[in-house]
Amino acid sequence: MSDRRTAILEAAATVIARRGVRGLRVEELAAEAGVSKALIYYHFEDRTGLLRRTLAFVNNRAERYTAEQAAAGQPATEAPAAPLRRLEQALLLELQDLPYVRENSTAWGELRASAVFDPELRGELALASVIWAREVADQLGEVRPTAPESALTASAERLTALLEGLSARWLSGILPLTDARTRMREAIGVEVAHLARLD
Amino acid sequence: MSDRRTAILEAAATVIARRGVRGLRVEELAAEAGVSKALIYYHFEDRTGLLRRTLAFVNNRAERYTAEQAAAGQPATEAPAAPLRRLEQALLLELQDLPYVRENSTAWGELRASAVFDPELRGELALASVIWAREVADQLGEVRPTAPESALTASAERLTALLEGLSARWLSGILPLTDARTRMREAIGVEVAHLARLD
Image (cartoon, rainbow over all chains, first blue to last red; front, side, top):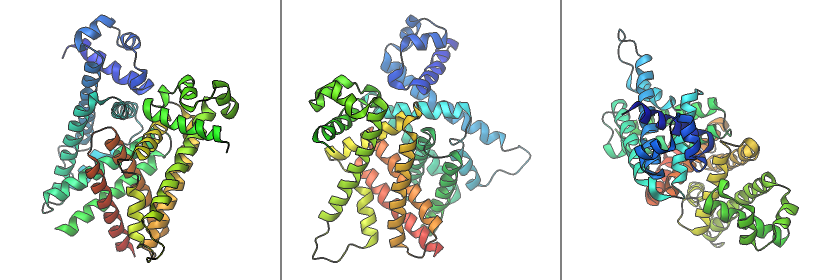
């Protein structure tokens, strides 16, 4: 991916997190990215193309910081973290008061909310949700290897939907971050205990 | 509340569900409600006043249809529904493909999402969330009368945040309604089993 293409996507995430998807103007995006409007259209064709690529970019970036921080919390000389600890780390990374987490989560929430009014992003959003739930289901499977596959998937869908709900409350200033983190940690425990009963 | 004031609030919920909070224009609202722009400013002072009252209106309307449908499903000659059944009914009413549920949930999601960018509605939103969680905690307490108060509150906060997360996925076309309802019903069972272990 070219540097300027990446710069445009980074700027799109920033502008969406600042003003929302419906506040995204190509003029402001061009100024933020330090490129011409023409270059934006050259790389992304139209607004929908830009939003689709921004969605993928925001999603990949979340995966990257999740993986990096998990690795950082995990010195090579120590034994691998227990599966439950890894699962908690991965989900709680999304509930942190860091600028890039706020920006990424706000942009994701906005892109999803815009799909209520505009169906063009629905396919990408649905796919991203399924992939995310699949990853969480795999991690739950490491915690509870004998739980049925369908139960792991259902638990993962509940945990990711809850995380979106808690994240939306936190980002909109309704719920303190510490409360959101506590509820999420408890929910993981409740779901894991539920899966244990199905063994 | 005067008829025209109610008509304006109904129209505001409709326009917000159609175009979002940031797409709400007083001209369109006046046309939808069949009143003058001046009357809107007379009743609500400014945009913030209008949004605050719309939030309360949407919230009260959700309580009303919840109560009405619960009563309709409950003939006076029969024994009261079991507490668990009442809790399920109350929460699942928000996940129904009916025009007024869609409109109300979409407007609520939009008002909450707008608080990410504009702090003016945060107080009202936080209060509404606390009251809702309190009601669900009371219903959980009827299902599990010996569970600790703090555990009931935490379960209720998780269930209401999950419902918002599932509702957002459904309304944005990412998750089929039947899946959202299944996940919600399962989550109630998982939380009630969790509370039972704390007895």
